[in-house]
Structure formats: C-alpha cells, structure tokens
Amino acid sequence: MISSSGSSTRRFRLPGAARFVCTVTLIACAAACASTGSSGPPQPDREITPIGDLVAREKKLDSIGKLLSDLNNDIRAWNNYFLAAKSDEEKARGRLMETHITTVAHQRRSEIIQELESGPLNNRIVAAAALGFTHDVEAQSPLLAALDDKEDEVVSNALYGLWLLGRSDTPADRVCPLLADSHDNGVRTQASLLLMSLTASGAKDGCIAPAARLHLNDASPAVRVHCTLILANVADTDSEQAIIDLLLDTEPLVVSAAARSLTLLSSNDAHAKGPAARALVKAWVLAKEPAKSSLNRALIEMAQKNYGHDEKEWAKWAERLP
Image (cartoon, rainbow, N blue to C red; front, top):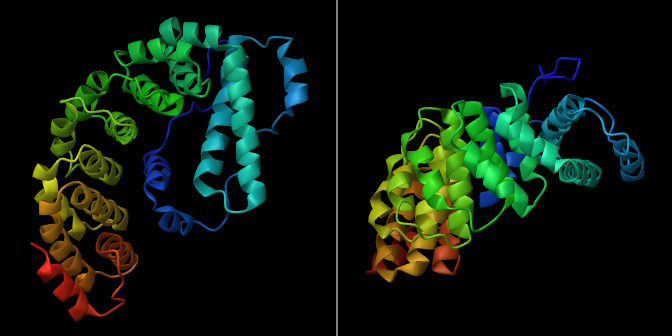
C-alpha cells in the first residue's frame, strides 16, 4: 500500500528473475534473453498518458500518495517492456513509457526526495526507484543517503536508482560494502550491477576487485555474472583461474559472461591469453547449446579468426599461445 493514495497496490521491486534477465541484456546476451517467454511483455496496469495530456494533468498536482502509486504501476510495466519487448511497436511503447516516467519524476522530484528521506516504508521503496528516472544530479545525494536505510528493499531500489541515474562519479566505496557484506540477494544483485556499470565507465577504486572476488560463486546467477564482468573491467588477472572455473557453471548466461570476461582479460594482458584460450577450447568442446555458441563467439573474438567447428584446429591455435 502507498501511503495517502487511498488505494492499495503492489510496490515496485525488481523480482530476482527479472533482475537477472534485465542485467544480462547489458553483456551482449540479448539472444539468450530474447528466447525466454513467448507471450510478450505484460500490459501496463493502466494506459500510458500522452505527454500533452500528462502536462495538463500534472498542473492539477496529484497527491504524493497518488503520484507514487501511479509511478509504482508504471515502473513495473516499463520493467516488463524492458525485459520482454520483441516487436518495434513494443519497444516504442517501452520508450514512451520511460519518457512518461522521467517527465513525472523530474517534475515532482522535490516531493519524491522528501518521501525517500522521511516517508513511510512503501513510499521510500517506490521513491528510490523513481528518482533514478529523473537523470538529475539532484537525485544522487538522497539516493546515496538511502544506502544507509535500515530496510533492504529501500537499499536495493536506491542502488537500482543510482544505476538508472547513470552518473560515473557515483562513489564506488559506498557500494562495495553492500556487495561484500549484504545477506540480501536483492542488495547484492543491484550493488554488483551498479559496480559493473561504474567499472565499465572506468572506476578503479581499490575496494571493487576484492568485493567482486568474494561473490564469483554467489548463490545468485546474476551476481556471478556481474562480478565476473567487474573483474574483467578492472583487468584483475589474478582472478583468471576463478573465472575459468565458471566456464563450467550450470547457468549458460554465467558461462557467457565468463567467456566474455576472458576475452577482455586477454586483450589487456598477453600473458592471460594462452590459459584463457586453452580453457575456452576445452569448455567449448564439452559444452551444449546455448553455452556452446557463446563460447564459440568468444574464441572467434580472441583469435581474430574462425576455425568453425574444427576442434583440432582450435586446439592447435590455443596450444601455440604462450
């Protein structure tokens, strides 16, 4: 229930499975993601208000409870489109919905910030996610402050909001402890997603690699994916063998992330290339689809040539490397 809305609704929380598929779209696993589900994205709980009508409606200033209730529904619907949209029409509808959420959240950001800082729990949970859509530097400080909230759901959505905000100056040292020490799956998932994004933008804080190493074998596949790519982004060659071990993971998307990470590590350190190449060939020979295709793509990228399905030629290439 959203406080002061006068009606009850489910508050926005990224479900574990949704978080997993959502985040792997960031690591070139779109083909695997697109294969899940066949019914298309669920329809939003209410019709999207055209922007012109939205501006007129917002002049009436809905109560903050009604605003957060509507944003809660819209963010959940947008998330479904983000995960499952297949046709151009569905993708366009998802973009329209994102623009709608951004417009509303930006216009009422001061009130949303106030709810995040001092509102009841349900309001804080929704406000943390909504502020990320503002893409406004004003949202960064309250989202960082929300990382100290006593409720894991608020912390998880604040991390998600910071990821949506997309600022490369987000301090990694505020995020590392949440990945390293949290017992909450949602918090670890969103912390690792945010650190993956920050390291892709060049973050090099010394806390990052140790935190990621701790969770290469996390119970959550999403966290394993993120941590593997974090270590590749920071060129942590000391983790090469641990990443190689993930080529035998039971989750194809983890295998794909490990293969991609090994190509990144070998491009930054020539000494890492030989062990990575031999491990990739061995894993590719043993693998079944869809992991087999991911491993083959990594081999082609690393070798800068394609030996097709010839196992002997791939083995010879790998053995020639130091």
